[in-house]
Length: 328
Ligand code: BEZ
Image (tube, rainbow, N blue to C red):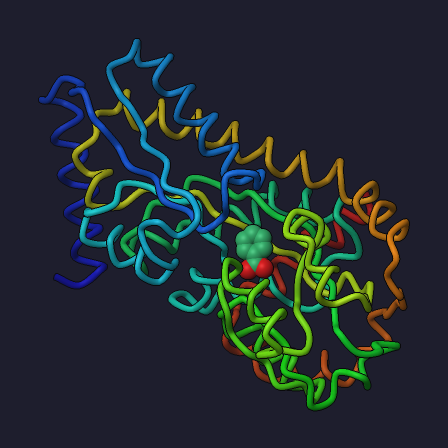
């Protein structure tokens, strides 16, 4: 069945069920790629606890962190068949399936973490989620995020020109691949759990990463030159399988939505609150640090725009929202 037809029947079936079927006890499963200490995983656990309490113990949610159910591409397939109920996914994987989400990765779309937080809570960003049922068979409940992206390297990194020819780890998705290709680097897609070993065994020279993950995974032990560039935001999205959603009662949908949204908002607040402290912590370590700005990346940004302004039609709407955030 095509995704569009699937979601039409999701909506129709959902409406019929809302009227006829009482809430049933469910044992849900939620997958994500981050390990237990990561804030996303803690939010998933808190969501599970909240749903258990609010359903009077009727529903349970088992959380599977650290790619236990497979990588994000595999989890999306499971969500589409209904084999997996829910996931917290990087928007990276979503943008591989729905290119318009690439708009969220426009280099320097936002200037700082506060603007990223405000943008992800804006109507312009949440409107994008409406594409997920028909385009991917997923119900997008809301956004979380991680910190802004930086670069760490084993060799000197004084500015974008030092990226030339470097095997640079990226999260596997196209907008970031195109950005680094435009800098002359050799982007190497690799999921988060594989990064430490790849740095340790010399498979890669540099990584694209956020402050929080650099600290949690101690990537600075293996790459002690950092370019603080803040070049991109890194949204996450909480999703429910469309096939699962269609069988849920109105009450259960509301419970999952409200509870998941509260935890996703808390994730955004967490990264917003910690970004500066994490930067200071890293600046206090024995790391060589340089900084780069939007102007330093101007050529790469122009090349990126040439590719993505067509692929991601929501870009002007997001830029307008950012302009409003800056003006408020
Ligand atoms: C990454 O791929 O770099 C990443 C994924 C999830 C959370 C933080 C970082």
